[in-house]
Amino acid sequence: MGLLDGKKAIVMGVGNQRSIAWGIATAFQREGAELAFSYATERLRENVEKLVVTLPGHETMPILPCDVTKQEEIDAFFATIGERWGSADILVHSMAFAAVEDLRGRFHEISRDGLKLAIDVSAFSLIAITRAALPLFERARGAELQLHGHGEGRSRGGDALPGGRPRTFEHPGECHLGRSVEDARRERGEGDLGRA
Image (cartoon, rainbow, N blue to C red; front, top):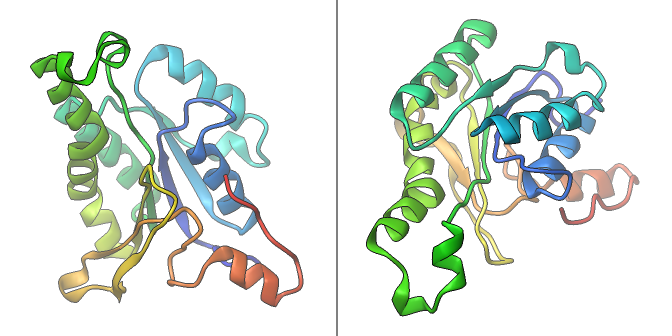
């Protein structure tokens, strides 16, 4: 019996087999979670599909488009998940983007539009997808997993905040109930998951 048996996890941000989101997805599945995935572009769709087919039960896993810079795609993504699952317990946000031309230059040479795009994809998207997922969370009293570039993280709030708002986690090792997956595996004598 896994820590996440019967839980439904939406994983956004898988780019390749080295993605933190992919490491989280495989750990969640080992712990019993059902998975759904998004992809932002057709190029990434192929990458995500190639990875997902390696998972047991992949035939039932939704893989849907969701460009987080387009509200209509966010709405369509979560509407489809709602139709298929009815609710969701976990939302993983592991997305970041900056235009190559802005990454190549010096800091003070970053364009205004490039910075706006980087903030939209890397930061505001968390707000946009959480807002869209909230009805699914409310039906399941779920959680959200937010990844940061730094190596430390904290959980905020209780298992469910007042008003049914999701609990936010800021580290990939933390899970839905505020107890890390690694701690639970150690308690069961199964060792460490390691870091993605």
